[in-house]
Image 1: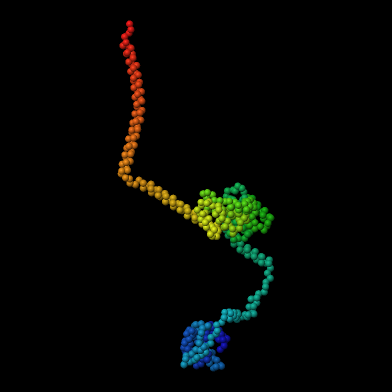
Image 2: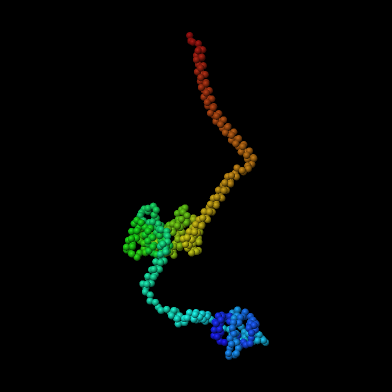
Length: 422
């Protein structure tokens, strides 16, 4: 039996080609004997006789056998039988089909089941070229944009802060630099159409600021949200050029007592002003920031010292990475200083509390008492000497006055005793 006949026979019984073998030249043999002979070949596994077909040429039977093991690609004997008893019978196995042949067989089977042919498929594989109008493509693209923007418009969003452009800035409003920085960030984050972005910018303006947008719209009806921001920058932004702002950035230094993280925030704010003016590229921001921190920080700042030693050994860090590193270093230094101060305070407290409990030598205490007694005696002697020196002049003056009184009292008696002259 040829391979085509075997394939048709397997398809008739819905057998896989890889699990089917055909024996030829079988005659006057029962199924049990055939199964016994097939069991001698271990490579084909368990077997089951599906059908027998009589060959009119050889007057023998073809036997279709289903196997449990895959027989395609295995080394099988050319004939099967029981030596000395029955057989041998030639063994026929279909060759392994390639992937292309398997695909073609599956395709033909599918087309046959659908009532189609290869000619019907060729028209689908080679479709005629379509002449699409460019205007139709633009209309479809615009429709897709509107459909994508519609859900975003209906969602709630955080409104921008108010800005009027009045100076001095009224309470409750933002300075232009702060407002422009927040608005630029939000325009990049919003997932909506440019028309919605323009509407939200106008909603946050009042006073003379909306007039600038109105003038810009009159001059350019197709102005975008970036054009709106550029017009506001021209009217209310700084008048310094990008070169002037870059020079100002280069001459911004850390103030004495200022933390390095605070200085870094001040630098980044000024750098964004330079970026809005077009004074530097986005790819150069990390490098310029690190260079300015290295040259503008205080020379005795410990965090800046470590950055100076390591900034040339690696790629420039982004703003968030550099700020995180600086804050971690500052927290570590602050914790170390707090620990030192707490240890010193505990040491002072322990010395103060333990000083009364110190035991002194009795001889030292005796000497201290004697010294106190000597000081008391010295003070007494000094007091006595001072008192004596004060009393003596008083005694002398008293004696003098007493002497004079006695002499005056005795004079009249003397004169009375003298006899009068005759």
